[in-house]
Image 1 (cartoon, rainbow, N blue to C red):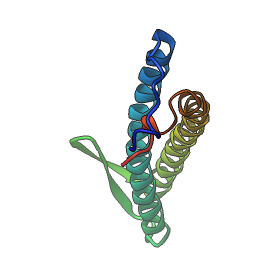
Image 2: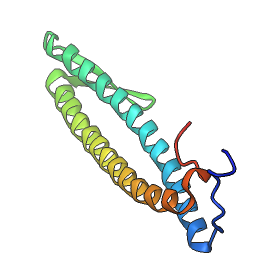
Image 3: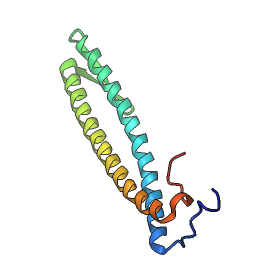
Length: 126
């Protein structure tokens, strides 16, 4: 920054609280995105499992839950997959909603902080 671009504004308590809030929101945003990526991978795996079950012959299948395997008929396994997809999709929707709320709140904070400090503050991800 050049000397003219620097803001001489004093950092007030309110400003510091806004900066801290922005930082916490940014950290949570990254956590949400990571959790969402994991959920999407699980959803993809469940979709693949459902596809495999549809191509099955009606025999029993082995369902892996944690460290255990269970014998289930194809119908029960399909039902389990559908319930799991619904549960995972609800979690993903909730995370996407939280991400949108965070982005809106960050937008408001950016407006306030850039208005006060101009180019002297950087609130962008690198």
